[in-house]
Amino acid sequence: MFGRVTGSMPATDDGAEHGLVPYPATPHRLRWFCHSHRESANAIIGTLTTRVQAAVPRARAPIAYRGVVTSRPTSRRLTRWGLAWRLLATAAALGVLTAGQLVDTDDYFPLGSLSQYGAPKDLNGTVRSVYLEAQFEGESEIRTLGLNHASTGVARGEIEGQLGRFMDDPSLLQAIADAHARLRPERAQPEVLYLRRSVTQLQDGEAVGEPEILTLATWEVQP
Image 1 (cartoon, rainbow, N blue to C red):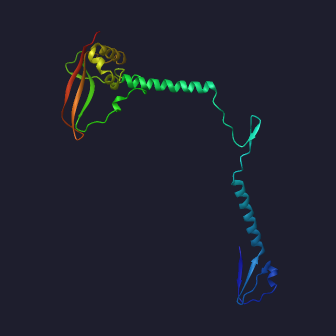
Image 2: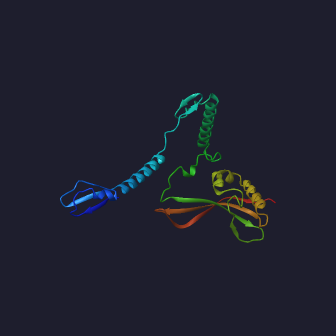
């Protein structure tokens, strides 16, 4: 952008013929500035300035809200009805949560007691797991019947949450047999159901020995 000529040429007006304007001379050097280069630099600076100005966001224009011009929306207060239903919903949720804690049930999930998460485990304690076994028609060996929604229509956690009811009234297992016949009609159906629990001893958080198997309820399936 700048031209520089060095030498011992005296500072005269000869450079004007080439569009050059002399700078003050030094004893051993003359410097000349080029008009055409200066015009190019000014054009580039003008273009960059225009682009920068276009990129800067403009201030948000005021908007009209209910006849009042303001720079941002005005918040509205809740109506009595809006406040009332919010208070009622909060009170209902707290009521169900309190009832689930007092009754110690998970029937109101996710507002139940969730007792399975309510206490830490002893690293030297025991781990208990409930499962279901069945004697199927035409088979001599007893095998496990999966406790899940696809096979029996009920998950293991739902059985564990009502374990006392099944122990007091084994006939409740009939509903599981009926659900299996409805969900898996193409498969062999159970003739006898065994609700069992395995108890595994822990030592420093590791299982030791063979688990103890307890039979909690037995039911002969009714056709």
